[in-house]
Image (cartoon, rainbow, N blue to C red):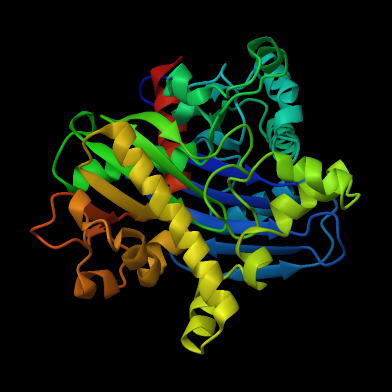
Amino acid sequence: MTSTDPTPSRVLVLNSGSSSVKYQLLDMAGSTRLASGLVERIGEETSRLVHTPLTGGDKRELTGPIADHGAALKAVSEELAKDGLGLDSPELAAIGHRVVHGGLKFSAPTVITEEVMAEIERLVPVAPLHNPANITGIRTAQALRPDLPQVAVFDTAFHTTMPEHAARYAIDVETADAHRIRRYGFHGTSHAYVSRETAKLLGKDPSEVNVIVLHLGNGASASAVRGGVCVDTSMGLTPLEGLVMGTRSGDIDPAVTFHLERVAGMSTDEIDVLLNKKSGLVGLCGDNDMREIRRRIDAGDQRAALAFDIYIHRLKKYIGAYYAVLGKVDAVAFTAGVGENAAPVREAAVLGLEELGLAVDGELNAVRSDAPRLISPEYARVAVAVVPTDEELEIATQTYALVRSGT
C-alpha cells in the first residue's frame, strides 16, 4: 500500500460456534456497523442464514443445507457482496475472532500465527465446547483471505490481571500447575467494555473508578474492576462456576459430583450435562427465560418464585463479596440480556443493600432504553447503571488498534 492509498478501516468480527457463525462488519473510521448476521444449524439440511445490512436495505433470510463452516463463510461473503461490502474489498483491514479460552499466555489481542494456533489447540481440554469451534472459524477465514491479518481476541484476556490469591484454587499446587487448573474467567470483552463505558458515564477516567460489572445473560458472570483492571471474577476454570445461570448451576459443592457418581450411578458425562445444560434456572423451574419466569411469578407460580429468589440470592452475595474485595465501589453496572432488560432483577439485586450506598430509583429503573444510563437516585453513594454491552465493537476496536499499531 502506498502512502496515497486510503487506509483500510473495516473489520469483520467472527464468533464461531460448533454449528453457527455470528458476524458483524464494522467501519472503524467512525465505529459504525455496516452489516450483521447469523448462520445457524451448520451441517444440517435446515441451515439458516439471516443477514441484516445496517446502512440500508431489508433483512434477508436464506434456508437450506450449509455443509460446513467454509460454506457458511462463503455464503456470508456472498451476502455482504450484494451490499457492496464483499470480503475481497481493499477496505477490509482485518478479521477479528472471538476465542473463548486463551489461558495465561494471551492477555491481549494477538495476531494469529501457527504458534498461536498451536497454543489455542493446547487449551482445548479446558475449553472443549468452545475452542475447537473457534479454531474452525479461524482456519476457514484464513483460507478465504490468507493475505489478511487475523486477530484473536480472548474472552479470558481481561481477567489475566487477577492476583494469584484470587486466581488460585486451594488444591495441591503441583497438580494444579500440571493440568492448568486455576480460575481464568470469561465474558472478558464484555467486562472490559462495560467497565470502561461505566467510567465514561460517570465522567471519569477508568483508572479512577472501581466497578462491579454484572453480565447477566443465559450465561452470567460478575467481575470486580479496580481502576480499569480486573481483580476478581466469578467464572473459573470453565464458565460453570459462579452465578446461577440459564442452564448452569454456578457455584456448587464439588462433592455433589462424587455423590451423584456413587449414589445415583451417573457417569462423568452425565454429570457434565446435568450441571451445564439441565441446571440453573431451567433446572429449578423448567424455564431459562427471565421474562417467562416473571410472568409465572405474577401468576402465582411458587416454583418460578423460588428459582428467582435463588438467582437473586447468589447475585446479591457476589455484589457483597466484590464490594469487600474492592473496598470502595463507585458503581455497579448491569449488562447483557437480563441485566439490560429485566428491571425486577436489578431492583431485587440491590434491595436491602442501602447500608452499602446502593439503591435503585423505581421510575428510572422502569425506563427501557438502548443507551447507557444511571438508575440510582441522586443521593445514592454508589451509582447503579445499566450499560448495554457491545462485545463485537470491543473485538473490532481491539483488532483494529493492533493492526494499526503494526505489532
